[in-house]
Length: 179
Image (cartoon, rainbow, N blue to C red):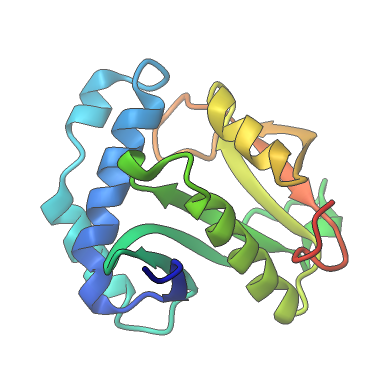
């Protein structure tokens, strides 16, 4: 049996990424976001979006385990710089990280995050940030276990209105070295 592989996503991965997003949101956010929003998530619509997104150069990595995409992470330059956070002007951001809920707890999310942090570091973005739903305690514990910490910022960043998120930061000089 081979070890899980991290690779760049391709358009052929679009449907699997969409399915992981839907399953991940429905499993992680049930009770935290409105059921109507979670139940309206559509794999076909998201597949179309991902198919278009993955035709151009993208910073989306997938983890392949047992010959199937089991999770993904999206990363790039920090998107939300305001006058009150100039330190993030040249930072990287993890935009999303999801693993198929059937695979939670097996280390695949950790592998994806480590790969994302290394990719950002290689791009000269050692200062890194991510946003997580404020009420998502499991997600917050996951990031904290990886050495990320809440920097006190809160804002409505989620795709849904009135869903507050908190910003986590990781400023290790080399994210591949455990804290």
